[in-house]
Length: 266
Image (cartoon, rainbow, N blue to C red; front, top):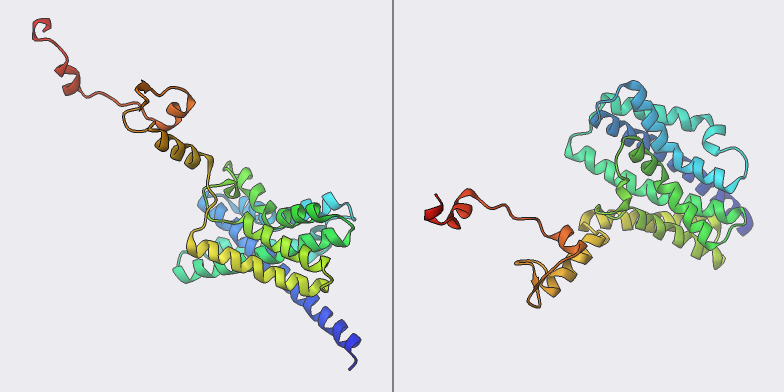
């Protein structure tokens, strides 16, 4: 077999592998959406809606922004059926055991890397630049979960205070873009990007990596300036919005209030 024929066979094999991973990701995210519906005590309609949003919304948004025809999740019937299957699994299986939870974490990390690489690759193949490819790679990976969280009245988990999730997606998309730019075949670049994204996501979960939030920064600054404790900085009482955010008003107890009352006033 010639080298060109071998490259074609390898590319087709990787493409088939990524399609299987893509559908597995739809099933997994359908399960995750269904588990949110279970936690919220939704009915069957809520299970199906959240499963579809979690599993397909990111890819639909990507395709709508690229404007390269109808969204792929709507033209391929397997995607919606697989998302519904994920909702059915979450309806019957609570996934409360530790092995089940660990499986969901590992599978979600692989899917995150796969979807970020797929989004970035599709953006590049449609003639978009580096920054749009990074944006669409991240949007493909985390867009569904963001829309799901907003739909149930919660702040999207990727906005802070949680273990890294958007950053591994960005690492996966950036890896794919960098490798494609230096001439690596697209399928190989997607495979490497998937491994980078999945490994980063699992390390973040294992090591509890988080990005700093603004409240931590302001608290450290206040601690350095002495704003915490008795509330005095340089001999004057600390005032302003930092004090309002960081210092809770102290309630005086009845005993303390009575301590300041003169006996003649009783």
